[in-house]
Length: 212
Image (cartoon, rainbow, N blue to C red; front, side, top):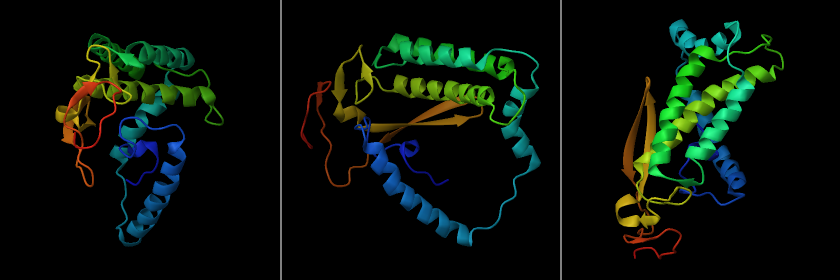
């Protein structure tokens, strides 16, 4: 999989500066495109099995086939409000736990109850919104699950319970992976190439020099 822009993560650390996304996808878009083209020249052709395609497409086909169900526009607003209230700018451990539990319940309901009134695939905004709801629910759960792994405040992750940044213990990336219906997390220490990261613990937002 070749990707560029913010979907790749990691380039800007935990808090992207406004406007940096443009240079991100311009630079890495060229790199990804060039390498993807080189790879495909020597790659063997792959044919996806009908079972794999059916597994991927079934949730989206069911949205159209379900005769009635929950309105995607209302669900999208509910998901946005849940994310803002429980996994927003200022977070707490209890709020994150509640948010993850709630979103798991909502996600399970969406798989069986989300529907669209318009069944046409041509310029069907309602259908696109329904697909967004399925994706939003999963992304919110991923964010909340990863946030629960970090017990201190770091960059855009501000934890009201612990407003300190622990460079010594938590200069780490948190990787999340969906395996079946389970989300697994892995802590990966940041590999310092040119600068040694700080090793101290400081109040959130306090600047420190490399190596302190």
